[in-house]
Image 1 (cartoon, rainbow, N blue to C red):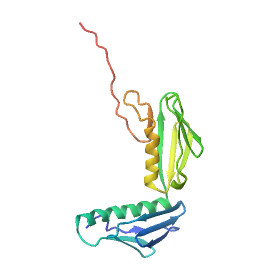
Image 2 (cartoon, rainbow, N blue to C red):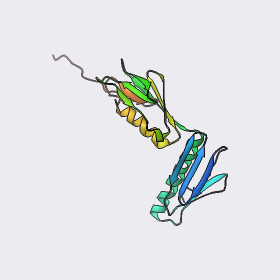
Image 3 (cartoon, one colour):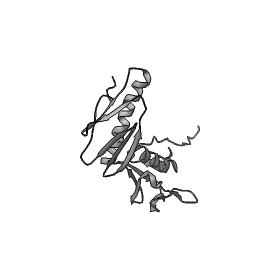
Image 4 (cartoon, rainbow, N blue to C red):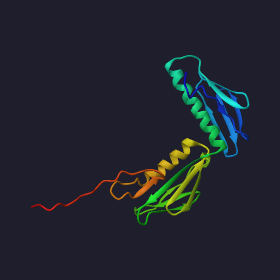
Length: 183
């Protein structure tokens, strides 16, 4: 039995859950999300919690059991608390600015780079200071994907550490060339 799959997902106050023909719809204070689960997996709710069950012990059913439970838990957490990714910008002259509900990066290229999330993704991009970007929203996958796209604009390089990185990310630094005198 899957240790994650057998745990029920507790529905917090203010969150509505409906399950209809393989689609789990969740609505809460942070937004609405839905998830279509595999036909062989059974998802049920009693109003206080959501349970996920599998039909047999085949390899595919075991794999889908824990995955389905984790994805359902992610959407319940997303509509109640939301998710957030924080990015830091390192480097002289490197900065970010809020523009058109997105973020405009100045990271050492001739042109500025503009990243605007799609309207249906329900993402919020904030720039509290010129070297910090905060991406938040109810969908964990979309928050992470947008943050990864912003980071991809200028990955941190290993010699000086300049670029866009996640807030708690550590970048392995390299030593660079050293010129030793020959005797």
